[in-house]
Image (cartoon, rainbow over all chains, first blue to last red; front, side, top):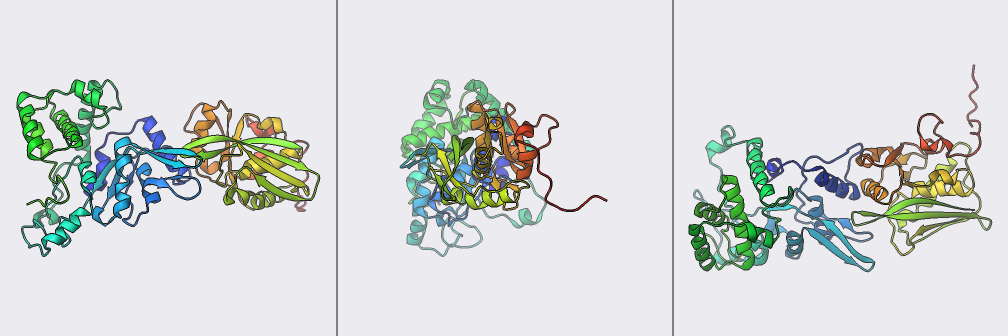
Length: 284
Length: 193
C-alpha cells in the first residue's frame, strides 16, 4: 500500500515524459480506446512468476517491452522480492544502471527506455517474525541465510534505500490514518527537485541521474560530514557504487532539508538507509 | 497494375516506414505476401478479402495478387497492415486514386464486416510520420486520441472501411477523391415510398 502511494509524491510528468510513457503503452497494446496522453506515472507490480521476457522485454516474434519499460518514469514494485526467480532478478542490474534495455537480435539491437524507481518488499526471514517484538522467530540461522541469499549482494547494493518496516500497532491499524497526505509530500519533493534543476542547470537531471562528473563538480560536504564518510567507508566496507549511491542519497536528503552543503546529519540520515551491506549479514 | 501505400513496422518502440506494394496481375487467382511477414500479417488476406467484398460496389479481384512489404529484410508483425493492403488492392485495380494516398501512412485492422479495429503502436507510427515528413495518418477511430497527440500531422480516423473509401466531398476530408468514378447504386432493394 505504501509502494502504491509512491507515484503520487513524484512531481508531475513533463509532456515529453508523458509522450514516452504513452508510446510504450501504445506499442504494448495497453492503451484504452480514446485514451490520449498518459498523465499519471505508471505503477507496475508483476507477479513473482514473471518470465525474463515479461520483466525485461523481448519474447518471440518482434521484441515487446517488459515490465521495466512499462514502469518507465514510474514505479516497479516487486512484492515478496525473494520469491522471484533469481536469474530473472539478476537481469535487472543492467537496466537499473543504464535506464535502457538493449535486446540483441539477429536483425539488430532493439532498445526500450526504462527509467524507473524499483521498490522491493520482503520479510526479514521465512517465518516473518525476525526482529518482531511481540512474537519470536522460529527460523534457524541456515534458513535465514538461505532466504536472504535469494537476493544477491550486487543487486542489494543497487537499492539506494533500505528501510525496516515494523509491524503496525493496534492503534495505527484501527485509528484514523496518521501522517501527511501525498500532496504535502509532493510539494516537498518538488521543492527539492527545483534545487536540483538549478544545480544541474537542467529540468530533467536529478541527483540520481546526474553523471559522476556533474555530481562531483557540484558536491559540497561539510568537513564533519567528510570525516563521517571516511569512517563509514571503513566500517561498512562500502563498494565504489555504494559510496556513489550514498552520496546521491545524502545530496537528496540535504536538498529536502534545504541545505546547500551536505551536513553531518544529512550523511547520517543517508547512512541509515543502508542497513543490509550484503545478503549474509543478518540485522539485529 | 501496381500500387504502393505506406505503413509501418515496429522495432522496439520505434516505427519504421514500410512500403506496401500490391500488384494485381493476370494469372492464376491467388494471394501471396512477401517481405518477412509474421502469421498475423499473412492472415490479412482473409480479412481484407471479406472486408472488400462486404463493401458496396467492390469485389476482391479474381486475379493473381502479390503484396510486398519493403524493406524486405525487416520482420513485420501485427494486423495493422490490413488497411494498407486493402487500399493497395483497390488502388491497383484503379478503384482508388493512388495519388490521393501519397504522403499518408495507413494502419488498421479490418473486421470481416469491414469495421476498422484498433491496433497497437499508433503513437509510434505518428511520431515516425512526423519525423519522415509525411502529411498524416489514416488510422482506426479508436486510436485517434493517441495519434492526435502530435500537433503537426493530420489524423484521419476511420471507424469503417467504407468511410475511408467513400467519405463525402464536404469539408477538408482528404478522401473525398479517393474512389474513382461514381458510387454504384446501393445493393439493398428497399424502395422509397
